[in-house]
Image (cartoon, rainbow, N blue to C red; front, top):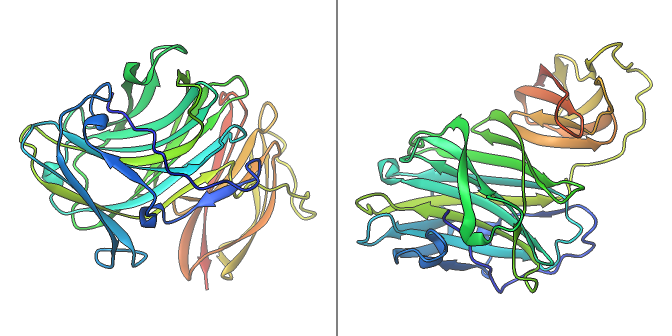
Length: 344
């Protein structure tokens, strides 16, 4: 596997047990980068690489970062890594979100998107790679067993297609994962350009040096057989831990629980204002572990251990697709409902 490095830079997490969102990570100046560490077993070949921050065009926020990969040695890689928290021991739920833009798309061998939580000798790696030229599928990072080291990690296919990315347009990648109560890694979902795929795969965490603690995240560019030069611009790079949208909800007085497995959406209707009132009830064959609301492929709310959702979200004018998803703790039972609402 092509692996990450453990950066020496950090931002202290205040109130680690509560939800925390780290935004515009691409702007941070306390990151690290490397080339040889990005190769198999952390001992790859050296590439030419650099980062340029505060790029206004192309950009969505006005402050994108340009990542460049080149050189002369085939299949050389580079990664850019940020340590965003010094203590991740109480973190359990993770959402990774980034927009990226590429011009020379045919040069892309693969792209990697990663979060890793280190906690007292364990490495909880939540990693996805778009293996454009080695299978054309999305793959997840998996250790052989619970004693595997970083060098013994490997990629396994999700079966989700990942062809050459569209050039000269912004692409959006979002994934969600969690650490289970038994210390395993649970890959929940992957959303690419608004298309959501449920992974629902549980794998081992790996071993790590006991002195390594905290939360890191990275983006990696992989070189092809000709090591063709290319750049990727990243923007609105965000990591959310412990589900920042998670809230407890009172039971809506005007919304009833379905009589059988399903979701009853009482609000919004076909039209709504910019502040959208949401009332919904979910029922499964067993207890609801998480109840989510997605708007146009972006998660807006998560309710834990309850099938009751009563909240509000902000949406721009126009028609939006809202997807409600409820599932139990094992993932063996899940139900969804999709509606459209037009903000006037």
